[in-house]
Amino acid sequence: MSLPHAILTALVEKPSSGLELTRRFDKSIGYFWSATHQQIYRELGKLEADGLIRALPAPQPARGQKKSYEVLPAGRDELARWTAAAQDPKPLRDTMLLRLRAAAVVGATGIEADLRRHLELHERQLAEYEEIEKRDFPPGSDSTEDRLRHLVLRAGIDLETFWTRWLRHALAEFAELPGDGSP
Figure 1 (cartoon, rainbow, N blue to C red):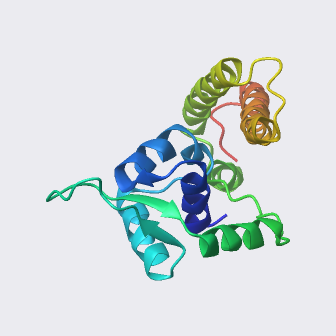
Figure 2 (cartoon, rainbow, N blue to C red):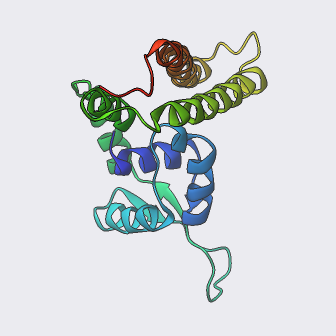
């Protein structure tokens, strides 16, 4: 996914200012595609220059008033084109896995504590996703929009479930390592 398409998605869902987009990224899209405030504003300028979005006219002119943006037909067409295009899955790149591989040759000092910290972080994220699921997807949420959004959330729940399970397994392996974890 690319940031322009994430922004187009968010603006099709609801016209917003850059600040509102930043807040929405923090609460939803940001769970799987993060962006800084500066990246969002930079991309809004590019999307506007490319004719994919426009700033909505202000109800009354005021200096310093925040601009709200909406998607133009060309932006919706681009989003539909991108959505329909085939894309290959991205290979997994995880620093913890690389550190474990390195520990096999230089020793595992310090990694067990970080595995525990990662487990706590993934457990918290899993609990947050499960709370969002209970709050936002009660039984009977069967519209296409709800079902597709729920699929995205389920991916997050399933990934966090995988990581918590894997981290518990890794910690169990560490408990069985001889001595100080040296190779």
